[in-house]
Length: 356
Image (cartoon, rainbow, N blue to C red; front, side):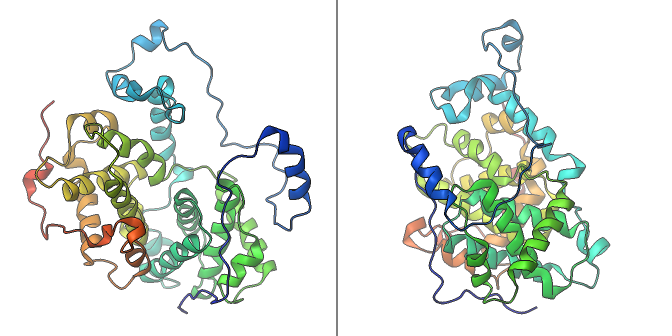
């Protein structure tokens, strides 16, 4: 497989930092109307849009919810976490993540791709996509969603190694338009491939991916669950621990590199990421606790296999030749979390059940 490179003179594109004021909305629309950009098209029916009915959090039905609601609603002052509905939202995400139409085959390399491509080629592609996402300052959610599209497509379609990079670019193009305020233009993404693929090829692959997804683009990813898990894991911290949050982000991106992680549900990977990050940041404390167990629905023993894969990834025992993610998190910007010490072995008692 040809190595993926970044054009030396490709200028990074940054996304808007905040919403525009309502008074400037009309001028914004007029400006965007003249801006050169690709569009996804007019999609009048979205099968993946769910409208949550309004409900009174003080109603009898709300009071009869499980104890986990107390954990979920302790931060009602943050509107992003939708405290009164957090339990329902989490239950919905857990249901959605197991739907077959949203899950890649856990063994698609063996069953579908066979000799066409292998796990190492996938790893190289993902490592390169991390670099592309960093170059364009894309959201972590965009990166994770891109990889989910890649895995889903590869679970249904045989692809040769010459078109693997094309698949990655088109997947990131779709994810960018789904997540970003100002997504990169298709021509800018093509520049990142040093023009090894054409605009027509990217647009054609985009259509093929959307057909494979059946336009179900809003799949839950590891980042979806980490948004809340990270907050719960720091429940006893007096202030947010940036090093912990960067380490969680690093471990989650490492998980994208390894084909072996495809078989794990996003919520399990997110829980395992928090488990290992807590172990590394506060080694004298139990990496799992009753609050996390109650909220995530996983006991420590459930996470063992996934945690061990993440542990090997962090130590370079797996994917050690893939360096983009590792170099990214060795920087001051991310508090050098890729250089943090980590025990070479994880003793079995770490995965014993915690007491309530």
